[in-house]
Length: 330
Image (cartoon, rainbow, N blue to C red):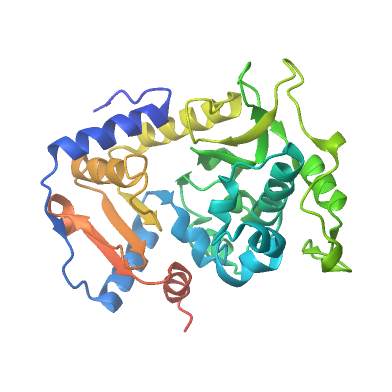
Protein backbone atom coordinates (compact mmCIF):
# COMPACT_ATOMS: atom_id res chain seq x y z
CA UNK A 1 0.00 0.00 0.00
CA UNK A 2 1.27 3.41 -0.94
CA UNK A 3 0.93 5.93 1.88
CA UNK A 4 1.62 8.84 -0.48
CA UNK A 5 4.79 10.23 1.05
CA UNK A 6 5.16 13.86 0.12
CA UNK A 7 8.03 15.09 -1.98
CA UNK A 8 9.01 17.14 1.06
CA UNK A 9 9.93 14.27 3.38
CA UNK A 10 10.73 16.67 6.20
CA UNK A 11 7.21 18.09 6.39
CA UNK A 12 5.78 14.59 6.21
CA UNK A 13 7.91 13.48 9.15
CA UNK A 14 6.81 16.50 11.18
CA UNK A 15 3.19 15.56 10.52
CA UNK A 16 3.86 11.99 11.54
CA UNK A 17 5.62 13.18 14.67
CA UNK A 18 2.74 15.44 15.70
CA UNK A 19 0.19 12.71 14.99
CA UNK A 20 2.22 10.32 17.13
CA UNK A 21 1.99 12.70 20.08
CA UNK A 22 -1.79 12.78 19.74
CA UNK A 23 -2.41 9.08 19.07
CA UNK A 24 0.20 7.09 21.03
CA UNK A 25 -0.32 5.82 24.54
CA UNK A 26 1.66 8.21 26.76
CA UNK A 27 3.16 5.25 28.64
CA UNK A 28 6.84 4.77 27.84
CA UNK A 29 8.61 1.49 28.40
CA UNK A 30 11.76 1.87 30.47
CA UNK A 31 12.00 -1.74 31.55
CA UNK A 32 15.44 -3.22 32.22
CA UNK A 33 16.43 -4.41 28.76
CA UNK A 34 19.16 -7.04 28.84
CA UNK A 35 22.14 -5.22 27.30
CA UNK A 36 24.00 -8.27 25.97
CA UNK A 37 20.83 -9.84 24.65
CA UNK A 38 19.84 -6.66 22.84
CA UNK A 39 23.29 -6.24 21.32
CA UNK A 40 22.93 -9.72 19.85
CA UNK A 41 19.43 -8.86 18.61
CA UNK A 42 20.73 -5.70 16.96
CA UNK A 43 23.56 -7.63 15.31
CA UNK A 44 20.96 -9.95 13.85
CA UNK A 45 18.82 -7.06 12.65
CA UNK A 46 21.79 -5.33 11.02
CA UNK A 47 22.47 -8.55 9.12
CA UNK A 48 18.89 -9.37 8.15
CA UNK A 49 17.24 -6.01 7.56
CA UNK A 50 16.35 -5.28 3.94
CA UNK A 51 16.69 -1.55 4.57
CA UNK A 52 18.10 0.58 7.39
CA UNK A 53 16.96 4.09 8.25
CA UNK A 54 19.44 5.84 10.53
CA UNK A 55 18.20 8.74 12.62
CA UNK A 56 21.02 10.62 14.34
CA UNK A 57 21.06 13.31 16.98
CA UNK A 58 23.63 15.19 19.00
CA UNK A 59 24.45 12.17 21.15
CA UNK A 60 26.19 10.50 18.22
CA UNK A 61 28.60 13.40 17.73
CA UNK A 62 29.13 13.63 21.47
CA UNK A 63 30.20 9.99 21.44
CA UNK A 64 32.59 10.86 18.60
CA UNK A 65 34.22 13.50 20.79
CA UNK A 66 32.51 16.67 19.59
CA UNK A 67 31.99 17.99 23.11
CA UNK A 68 30.97 21.63 23.60
CA UNK A 69 32.20 22.02 27.17
CA UNK A 70 35.28 21.32 29.26
CA UNK A 71 38.80 20.98 27.90
CA UNK A 72 37.85 21.21 24.23
CA UNK A 73 35.90 24.42 24.81
CA UNK A 74 38.66 25.93 26.96
CA UNK A 75 41.37 25.11 24.41
CA UNK A 76 39.85 27.13 21.58
CA UNK A 77 37.83 29.81 23.42
CA UNK A 78 39.88 30.63 26.54
CA UNK A 79 39.93 34.35 25.69
CA UNK A 80 36.15 34.54 25.27
CA UNK A 81 35.75 32.62 28.53
CA UNK A 82 38.02 35.11 30.32
CA UNK A 83 36.12 38.08 28.90
CA UNK A 84 32.52 36.87 29.08
CA UNK A 85 32.59 33.87 31.47
CA UNK A 86 30.87 31.52 29.04
CA UNK A 87 30.25 27.99 30.32
CA UNK A 88 29.98 26.29 26.93
CA UNK A 89 30.16 26.93 23.20
CA UNK A 90 26.40 27.34 22.86
CA UNK A 91 26.37 30.27 25.28
CA UNK A 92 28.96 32.12 23.23
CA UNK A 93 27.01 31.52 20.04
CA UNK A 94 23.99 33.44 21.36
CA UNK A 95 25.86 36.31 22.99
CA UNK A 96 25.02 39.81 21.60
CA UNK A 97 28.51 40.94 20.60
CA UNK A 98 28.95 44.67 20.08
CA UNK A 99 30.82 44.31 16.79
CA UNK A 100 30.57 42.06 13.76
CA UNK A 101 34.32 41.55 13.97
CA UNK A 102 34.00 39.88 17.37
CA UNK A 103 30.84 37.99 16.40
CA UNK A 104 32.68 36.38 13.51
CA UNK A 105 35.78 35.93 15.63
CA UNK A 106 33.75 33.61 17.83
CA UNK A 107 31.74 31.94 15.10
CA UNK A 108 34.67 31.32 12.75
CA UNK A 109 36.38 29.27 15.47
CA UNK A 110 33.10 27.55 16.32
CA UNK A 111 32.50 26.59 12.70
CA UNK A 112 36.06 25.52 12.00
CA UNK A 113 36.53 23.14 14.93
CA UNK A 114 33.04 21.62 14.62
CA UNK A 115 32.83 21.39 10.83
CA UNK A 116 36.27 21.30 9.26
CA UNK A 117 38.22 19.41 11.90
CA UNK A 118 37.73 15.66 12.18
CA UNK A 119 35.94 14.25 15.19
CA UNK A 120 38.41 12.97 17.82
CA UNK A 121 36.97 9.43 17.73
CA UNK A 122 36.14 7.30 14.64
CA UNK A 123 32.55 6.59 15.68
CA UNK A 124 31.04 7.64 12.36
CA UNK A 125 33.45 5.49 10.36
CA UNK A 126 32.65 2.54 12.62
CA UNK A 127 28.95 3.09 11.96
CA UNK A 128 29.59 3.18 8.22
CA UNK A 129 31.43 -0.15 8.44
CA UNK A 130 28.26 -1.69 9.87
CA UNK A 131 25.87 -0.42 7.18
CA UNK A 132 27.93 0.26 4.05
CA UNK A 133 26.79 -2.91 2.28
CA UNK A 134 23.12 -2.39 3.14
CA UNK A 135 20.35 -0.27 1.67
CA UNK A 136 20.50 2.67 4.06
CA UNK A 137 19.46 6.29 4.42
CA UNK A 138 20.41 8.83 7.08
CA UNK A 139 18.27 11.61 8.52
CA UNK A 140 20.00 13.80 11.09
CA UNK A 141 19.49 16.96 13.08
CA UNK A 142 23.28 17.32 13.42
CA UNK A 143 24.93 20.13 11.47
CA UNK A 144 28.60 19.10 11.74
CA UNK A 145 28.82 17.14 8.47
CA UNK A 146 30.40 14.12 10.20
CA UNK A 147 28.51 11.59 8.09
CA UNK A 148 29.86 12.85 4.79
CA UNK A 149 33.39 13.30 6.18
CA UNK A 150 33.30 9.66 7.33
CA UNK A 151 32.47 8.47 3.81
CA UNK A 152 28.69 8.06 3.83
CA UNK A 153 27.09 8.45 0.42
CA UNK A 154 26.04 12.09 0.03
CA UNK A 155 22.91 11.02 -1.86
CA UNK A 156 21.76 9.07 1.19
CA UNK A 157 22.04 11.93 3.69
CA UNK A 158 19.45 14.44 4.82
CA UNK A 159 20.72 17.22 7.11
CA UNK A 160 17.39 18.65 8.25
CA UNK A 161 18.64 21.55 10.36
CA UNK A 162 21.38 23.03 8.17
CA UNK A 163 25.15 22.83 7.96
CA UNK A 164 27.90 24.74 9.77
CA UNK A 165 29.67 24.79 6.41
CA UNK A 166 27.09 27.01 4.72
CA UNK A 167 26.27 30.73 4.91
CA UNK A 168 22.99 32.33 3.92
CA UNK A 169 21.55 35.82 3.74
CA UNK A 170 20.29 36.86 7.18
CA UNK A 171 17.27 38.61 5.67
CA UNK A 172 16.95 36.20 3.72
CA UNK A 173 16.41 37.74 0.32
CA UNK A 174 16.88 34.52 -1.68
CA UNK A 175 16.96 30.75 -1.16
CA UNK A 176 20.60 30.02 -1.80
CA UNK A 177 23.45 28.97 0.47
CA UNK A 178 27.20 29.47 0.13
CA UNK A 179 30.15 27.26 1.08
CA UNK A 180 32.16 29.01 3.77
CA UNK A 181 35.34 26.94 4.20
CA UNK A 182 37.65 29.42 2.49
CA UNK A 183 36.35 32.51 4.29
CA UNK A 184 36.20 30.76 7.69
CA UNK A 185 39.85 29.77 7.37
CA UNK A 186 40.77 33.35 6.46
CA UNK A 187 38.88 34.56 9.54
CA UNK A 188 40.87 32.17 11.74
CA UNK A 189 44.15 33.29 10.21
CA UNK A 190 43.25 36.94 10.78
CA UNK A 191 42.92 36.23 14.52
CA UNK A 192 46.44 34.85 14.61
CA UNK A 193 45.74 31.14 14.30
CA UNK A 194 47.52 28.65 12.07
CA UNK A 195 46.60 25.16 10.88
CA UNK A 196 48.58 22.07 11.75
CA UNK A 197 49.33 19.34 9.21
CA UNK A 198 46.37 17.40 10.59
CA UNK A 199 44.05 20.41 10.33
CA UNK A 200 44.05 21.40 13.99
CA UNK A 201 43.65 25.05 14.93
CA UNK A 202 46.95 26.10 16.54
CA UNK A 203 48.95 29.21 17.43
CA UNK A 204 52.67 29.86 17.91
CA UNK A 205 51.81 32.39 20.60
CA UNK A 206 48.36 31.89 22.15
CA UNK A 207 48.66 35.14 24.13
CA UNK A 208 48.60 37.15 20.87
CA UNK A 209 45.36 35.66 19.53
CA UNK A 210 42.67 38.29 18.86
CA UNK A 211 38.95 37.85 19.43
CA UNK A 212 38.14 39.91 16.32
CA UNK A 213 38.54 39.15 12.64
CA UNK A 214 39.67 41.70 10.05
CA UNK A 215 36.83 44.00 9.03
CA UNK A 216 37.28 43.22 5.35
CA UNK A 217 36.36 39.58 6.01
CA UNK A 218 32.85 40.28 7.35
CA UNK A 219 30.53 38.44 4.93
CA UNK A 220 27.67 40.25 3.24
CA UNK A 221 24.94 38.95 0.97
CA UNK A 222 26.01 39.23 -2.70
CA UNK A 223 22.41 40.00 -3.72
CA UNK A 224 21.03 42.53 -1.21
CA UNK A 225 24.10 43.53 0.80
CA UNK A 226 22.66 42.49 4.18
CA UNK A 227 24.79 40.57 6.66
CA UNK A 228 25.33 36.88 6.07
CA UNK A 229 24.69 34.32 8.79
CA UNK A 230 24.97 30.58 9.38
CA UNK A 231 22.59 28.21 7.62
CA UNK A 232 21.16 26.82 10.87
CA UNK A 233 17.50 26.30 11.69
CA UNK A 234 16.96 28.63 14.65
CA UNK A 235 13.96 30.65 13.41
CA UNK A 236 11.81 31.23 10.32
CA UNK A 237 14.68 32.81 8.36
CA UNK A 238 16.34 29.41 7.79
CA UNK A 239 17.01 28.87 4.08
CA UNK A 240 16.01 25.51 2.63
CA UNK A 241 18.01 25.55 -0.59
CA UNK A 242 17.83 23.29 -3.62
CA UNK A 243 20.14 20.71 -2.05
CA UNK A 244 17.97 20.60 1.08
CA UNK A 245 14.84 19.88 -0.97
CA UNK A 246 16.64 17.23 -3.02
CA UNK A 247 17.70 15.45 0.17
CA UNK A 248 14.21 15.75 1.65
CA UNK A 249 12.72 14.26 -1.51
CA UNK A 250 15.29 11.44 -1.55
CA UNK A 251 14.38 10.57 2.03
CA UNK A 252 10.67 10.47 1.19
CA UNK A 253 11.39 8.29 -1.84
CA UNK A 254 13.50 5.86 0.20
CA UNK A 255 10.72 5.48 2.77
CA UNK A 256 8.11 4.96 0.08
CA UNK A 257 10.15 2.35 -1.79
CA UNK A 258 10.84 0.37 1.37
CA UNK A 259 7.67 0.92 3.40
CA UNK A 260 6.60 -2.76 3.44
CA UNK A 261 10.06 -4.31 3.67
CA UNK A 262 11.93 -5.52 6.75
CA UNK A 263 13.22 -2.13 7.91
CA UNK A 264 15.48 -1.39 10.85
CA UNK A 265 14.87 2.11 12.19
CA UNK A 266 18.15 2.79 13.98
CA UNK A 267 17.97 5.83 16.26
CA UNK A 268 21.32 7.09 17.58
CA UNK A 269 21.71 9.77 20.24
CA UNK A 270 18.39 11.54 19.61
CA UNK A 271 17.28 13.58 22.60
CA UNK A 272 14.07 15.39 23.45
CA UNK A 273 14.79 18.80 21.92
CA UNK A 274 13.23 17.99 18.54
CA UNK A 275 11.60 14.52 18.84
CA UNK A 276 9.04 15.24 16.10
CA UNK A 277 11.78 15.09 13.42
CA UNK A 278 13.21 11.62 14.09
CA UNK A 279 12.03 9.86 17.28
CA UNK A 280 8.26 10.20 16.99
CA UNK A 281 8.12 9.53 13.22
CA UNK A 282 10.27 6.40 13.73
CA UNK A 283 7.80 5.17 16.36
CA UNK A 284 4.89 5.84 13.99
CA UNK A 285 6.48 4.07 11.01
CA UNK A 286 7.38 1.02 13.10
CA UNK A 287 3.80 0.91 14.36
CA UNK A 288 2.52 1.04 10.76
CA UNK A 289 4.85 -1.67 9.45
CA UNK A 290 4.68 -4.91 11.44
CA UNK A 291 7.77 -6.13 9.57
CA UNK A 292 9.95 -3.34 10.99
CA UNK A 293 12.08 -2.96 14.11
CA UNK A 294 12.97 0.09 16.21
CA UNK A 295 16.42 0.29 17.81
CA UNK A 296 17.40 3.09 20.18
CA UNK A 297 21.01 3.61 21.25
CA UNK A 298 21.40 6.42 23.74
CA UNK A 299 23.12 7.29 26.98
CA UNK A 300 20.52 7.28 29.77
CA UNK A 301 17.71 7.92 27.26
CA UNK A 302 17.04 4.52 25.67
CA UNK A 303 13.28 3.88 25.76
CA UNK A 304 10.33 2.98 23.57
CA UNK A 305 6.54 3.40 23.61
CA UNK A 306 4.42 0.50 24.83
CA UNK A 307 2.79 0.05 21.40
CA UNK A 308 6.00 -1.17 19.79
CA UNK A 309 7.81 -2.55 22.82
CA UNK A 310 7.92 -6.11 21.44
CA UNK A 311 9.66 -4.91 18.28
CA UNK A 312 12.09 -2.56 20.01
CA UNK A 313 15.76 -2.87 20.92
CA UNK A 314 16.92 -0.34 23.50
CA UNK A 315 20.57 -0.13 24.50
CA UNK A 316 21.67 2.33 27.15
CA UNK A 317 25.29 3.44 26.92
CA UNK A 318 27.95 5.24 24.92
CA UNK A 319 27.19 4.77 21.23
CA UNK A 320 30.82 4.30 20.24
CA UNK A 321 31.25 1.50 22.78
CA UNK A 322 28.07 -0.20 21.57
CA UNK A 323 29.20 0.01 17.93
CA UNK A 324 32.46 -1.68 18.86
CA UNK A 325 30.52 -4.48 20.53
CA UNK A 326 28.35 -4.82 17.43
CA UNK A 327 31.50 -5.23 15.35
CA UNK A 328 32.60 -8.00 17.67
CA UNK A 329 35.52 -6.15 19.31
CA UNK A 330 36.07 -5.94 23.04
